[in-house]
Length: 277
Image 1: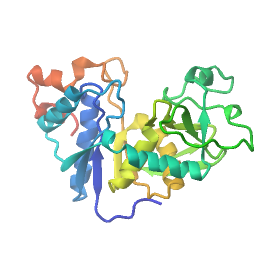
Image 2: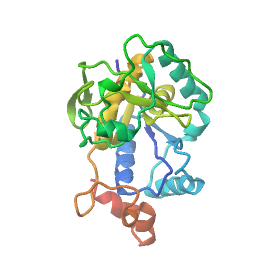
Image 3: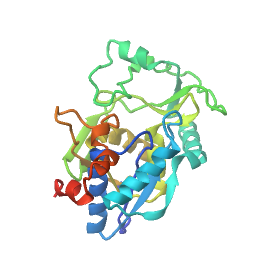
Image 4: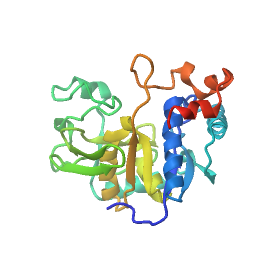
């Protein structure tokens, strides 16, 4: 069930692992436009759980660049690194419901499995082979503190999940075929993107998630988590991806198309936004 709140609340959720580029800018501008059209608000979340890559200077840069572009949000900013107890509580809930299991398989193991497709749209989440699941009846070990092994959510094989995207329309995927068991907690004792995103969007009262189309498949995973955690799911609006001159979608390695670079070259926010009208 979608969040039934009558007050629109969207969010900007950059990850401070590099400089923001044009793809981020267009998605964030779309989020702001949709919030304004609905008479709602935007919240800012700092998705800083990637300890190895997140840096304070990138946090400062993303805030400065977003303000320069003309984005506004309701203070204060929320940082995921300060919300770990919330994620751990959700993990405990999933464990009590026996919806997760420990996994010692590496990503290489998964990719090497005969039934695991290698052309997945999201390379960080290859389809997990069902034969790697624990045998039926295997006792579920307790959660440790700290967590020292990966934990995966067991998807309901064969279930068709459907949602209506605000841009692309009706979307559907079959659990166990289009996506498999996915990580909810990593062996370095950190929540996965899927779990943290669901816990935060629900906790922040987000009514619509605006993000890039590369995260479309993640939406199906997250819908399963919303249901498992008895949380209301928001609506979703996936923006078409911005690509470079070669047709490759932008990433933070595209320094030439970073907002900071364009700004230093003398481009104005109005010039950048003009192409999105």
